[in-house]
Image (cartoon, rainbow, N blue to C red; front, side):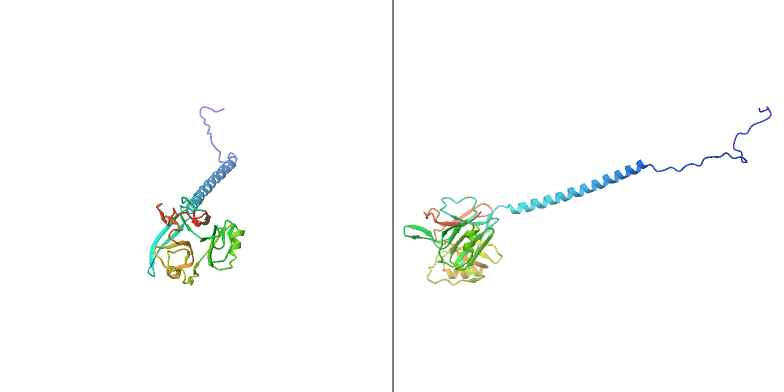
Length: 280
């Protein structure tokens, strides 16, 4: 009970302080930690996916480049020169592989960008036969050793050599390859001496250059085999054998612009044993 002349002071008594519970520190919420971990994981996934996509695009670009180089269109690089006063025309096949074909072409197939009559043939009795050992896709059509020079086509390997007893003949049969013989002109950069009984004539050769590439080389003038061989050596030819090079023997080439160059009498009626080395 308070009288009219009394007041009551409401507040803390310093002599009798009121007990207060200490304030507990706030604990971090576990939910916030989980959210932070999830955010960091998402960021890491985004970075990983970005790098993976970038690597995949780079890989696709490399594959496309490789495919383009493999599937480049075939053509023939053609050039002219004069060596030892002999005019030569060189045909280098690009992006094409060689093989041997037998049988007269009434029309030159479009897929063959370079080709020429290969092994000689002659009449024996009443029928024509290929001169020298000859194999097409593993099938032996002739077996004789009248000439030392040879060409063997074994899968992706082409050998031009000068050997009467070469094992490449049997290997061509076993591996379904091609093989034919002709006169040897150049062996390992040196000219081969052929009998001088051969008359001067238009010449044609299957050659391997010093850089390893194959080519066909023609003359547009009549020369001896020995003079032709010496000119090939001076032109940087490592190995070479003759091809049929008479005026009637057919040779064709398609340049990069699609123009076709044909030499020889394609209307001449050759026997069915006529054969070609072609690039497609």
